[in-house]
Length: 137
Image: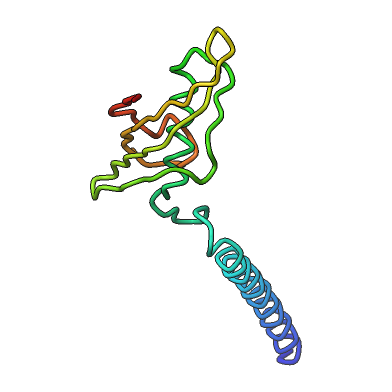
């Protein structure tokens, strides 16, 4: 009779060991996935903990606000000709220009300064920003 108990006990231990190994493998796979994700996204602003917006992020949002506020349907913004400053309270000031055609078809260059406040969340979503002030010169 003691031999049956020994075999039964051995099978129970084997089940527990296999379960433990499976749980450990799942944990290792998840851990490797997290490490790979951090490695792939380390240079971007997307990740588990997004960084504060860059000047380019603020410039893209400023362009969205300007496009919705001007009458011209096709303003052209320079890709790299802008300046930005960031205050410690998540307020960004963007200074740049855009070219647009007026009613007579003449191209007009308009300088602007946009002050934006970042409220948190996705930096590319305009709803996460507040337009504090927009000046066209």
